[in-house]
Length: 423
Image (cartoon, rainbow, N blue to C red):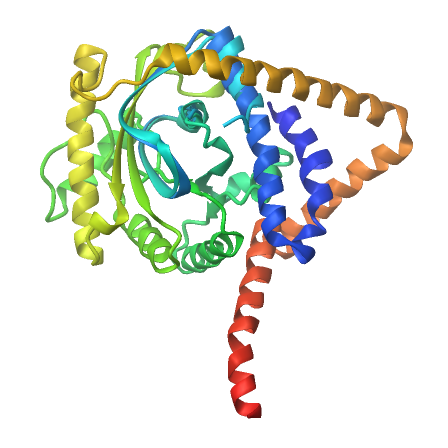
């Protein structure tokens, strides 16, 4: 997967860099497209090779392709892998990784709850962080709703400097936080402005728990929460959410008018729970990944920071109870809407496998070119040097683009003032 990400960065995303100065909206769309088509292959691996199945309950995520914030419980370090599978249910893009996850690894997903396919709204996704790979499985979910291209993820800043995958995620406008509050406030403001300028459908995934669930993180989370005035109970199936970052992100996106819904997604694993990438290679593969979806209209959420924090804590209390029920019965609320997985499967299987074939040919072609032509070798070295320079002097290509966009918007705001002074 890392090799595929590197080739996509070098030969698909980097050639679009001049568009940063000519047409940032098209640059955003192209880089999201390239990332999207790559990701679907991974779900092919998880579902078709490993046999992992996902189940989705709750609301429909595909009513429109607008901008949303996704919040998720962080059960393991691998949660992000399975969220790809969820989103694959509802976009032909990001196909490469999804193909690997679904078709080669055989991972299946089941979705219940609200419908994400009725429109493609601008959403913020909140997800429990069960494993370190959760975000791979959210790809599978979004591909089923055919909204995988618009998925962005909030990640720690160290990841953006990983040669290949990290640079590719920067081009795709993922949000990277330093966990230094003064810096992160500016980062959130700038990237929210960039999202607004691009005027594209958006699903932004955040893990409010801050880290994945382990015995150590669970102990620390319960100890810290017990000292808070709002503490109600110790959690066994998720961690207590951290409020500050979520409240500021929600407030900033709301003020920028780039948010229509908050999608509360709960992830549960049937069978093995992989804690790291190596577990997949060892055969520790979940048989089925379940997703329960609850969609909230942004207009129905409270306005003040204090009330938003209370709302998120209530969501997590409900999530803890929902997960307790799931790990007792191996399914989420039986009364919730359950999507026709067989019908969705037949539709997505061809797209996943096509993405796998095309991306494999793409890698094979450029591998041949690298070994055959000195100019291509020189170009690859220049691409790596360019990104190393951007990381060193501009804190990454994504920070450079966001700052450039912020400067342009600031200049545009000054134009009417200058015209008035001239009059």
